[in-house]
Length: 405
Image 1 (cartoon, one colour):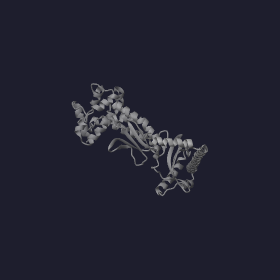
Image 2 (cartoon, rainbow, N blue to C red; image 1 turned 30 degrees about the vertical axis):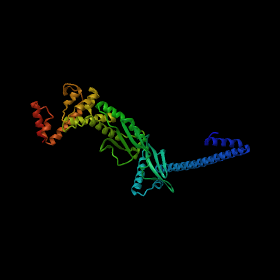
Image 3 (cartoon, one colour; image 1 turned 90 degrees about the vertical axis):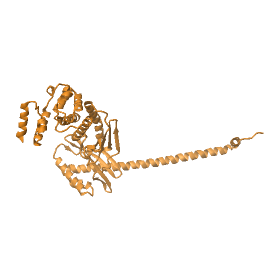
Image 4 (cartoon, rainbow, N blue to C red; image 1 turned 120 degrees about the vertical axis):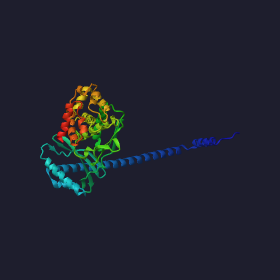
């Protein structure tokens, strides 16, 4: 006779229960279990249907709100088309008298623009966003066959949607485009602008550094801000952090969202920053030739980036004749008081006389500089512009300085 463990006793009890269970009771138990399962499934199905109906109704309500907003935009544009100031004014709403007056000015501007036969006020909504009572619409207009768009804001009042002042907190979700070279931070409205920057700026950086032989650059950070007070430029304490105002703050040409003025400004800023970085802290001193050469190198890069014609004849011809790398060598060779002879060194020729370049812009700068030095009575720097080893040249220079005094 041995000792039985608890688990053995429990197991035996379970076997006895199974053997002793009445078959009819077992069937009733299984039927009850099936009923519970079916009832639970029925409740789940009913709940899913209710949720589905609620979601469908909410979707229908959202669609009604959206269609009402589109109808309001169409009515507003129609009032502009036919010249109905009363209908147009009834859609505007704000406590700001200044904004309401600006909308009347906008109405008058459109009436003037309508005199041009190639203006089409289509009222077509290129994009619509609704967030509770707030609405934002990108409205199309076509001028001379070119598509433009404006961002208009609306608020849903008890009597319907009304055009209200801009709400720049309603500019979409915040987004980021990032690579090793660059990070662009922006909001959803500016997606096409951010994409234009992302497809262009890396090429500018690569082209600039290929010519100037840059060391490793820090990451370029670009912030696009829906803020009318933002001016294009670097943050004061972060030289590679660029701020740009959203182009959608004003009517924007949709096939040229990055407008030429902004493109040129960014090209100039980036060119100067690359030149400054590649120069390793060397700053030219006015009125040395290095002062002008540093400027013209930056202008040459700006022209390369933007495609805008700039009078950089000397650097254009210098790079064409001796290669872009010669521009990098020239910048590296610039000392604060370097004279034009440094160009010969960078080109690998014996003297300035051997340089095969177009001197027009350099000569224009020299003539302007002469006038500035004469006006400042700076005879030392004035005479330094001449070859004083030749007595005739020296006498002529001195006579010119005195004669203009």
